[in-house]
Image 1 (spheres, one colour):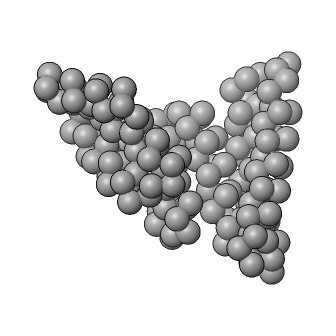
Image 2 (cartoon, one colour; image 1 turned 120 degrees about the vertical axis):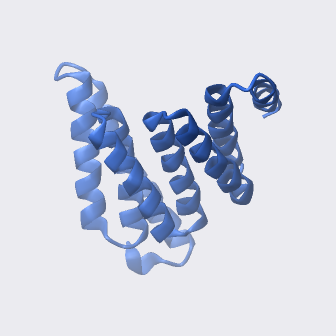
Image 3 (cartoon, helix red, strand yellow; image 1 turned 90 degrees about the vertical axis):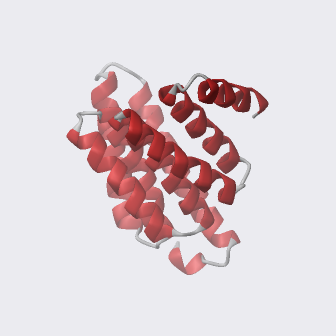
Length: 169
């Protein structure tokens, strides 16, 4: 975190919006990883604005997806869905297949968290297919990605059980 704060300060001193936006995005992700969602969301919202100022559509989409994930982990599914769906649409319109795949995976987590296992599974399958297209038919990673998606569903199921939401599983 300290290193990112140094980079952020240097970017601000140099009036370098691109590096500032990148540092803000990374810092927001770090706060979210530490379960400090209030700080993560404030920083990621600022990152979205900076990326918009720079005019970097991919940067905006990535920051929106990170912001959406913070809301998902907080349990605010509607906000998470809106942000990640916006990122997904941006990835689609810009031909960013990898971004689409990650956003679909994140949207699947939202579907599962809301008790819609069928939509979650369809989104995870679509995500795995996109990753498979990106990596090619001879690459072993699509199988690993599919396995990871199934572990993700299992982890979400366990989390739901831990939170007394077993009726969703």
